[in-house]
Length: 276
Image 1: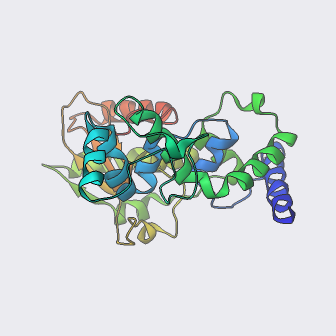
Image 2: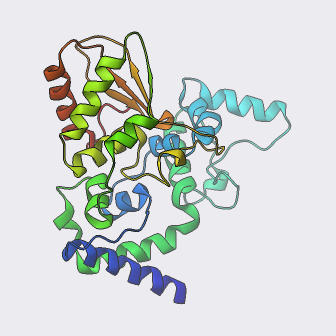
């Protein structure tokens, strides 16, 4: 009870940071802000946060015949069949979930509930207290025009990203990529801090750096630097692989056209478009 009151108070503090436009520089996960907005957590959130869990526990089930194949494997191994319980077997994913077998018909529902539980199952009560505290100060309906990344930047502030430092730590790949990459960094230099943070979020999944550019790492703690790959069709829009910190730019021959497309991506990226 006492620790929940602290979390509730934190929710109110975050809301006051928004109301008084005084950012609170706490490195909170984007998932927190999705919950504040009432957004449903998706399997794609797990893919970004823990690629290994996605690769071994979720993706195979979402393929055609995936549920049948997994149940057959478990039978061959002499293990219990897959039912609607959490990944660690400690919680039912829905009422009576322990007795509900995962089938081809309900595998998508299972994947959705499994991913949601994996992300917030152990802290559901605390997260609910934080959301309640936040909305006591800022009603949810006032946030309807914001996406999660915009809300995070309003509450936690915008990081000051040094473009020269960004460029120095970037790995550029592809046939004749240097010109396009240089145009990209020149474009960043002409844009405000908010746009730079949005582009960082588009490419890496986060608008802030964990601990400088050297802090970009994968789930095993191995270095995973920011990369630019110049490839694809000239008419394509820039895209990103956030789990690999990879920005894909088209091999375009015009600086002006590239800048227009980058502006378009920044405008739409908050709506979770062009992430692959």
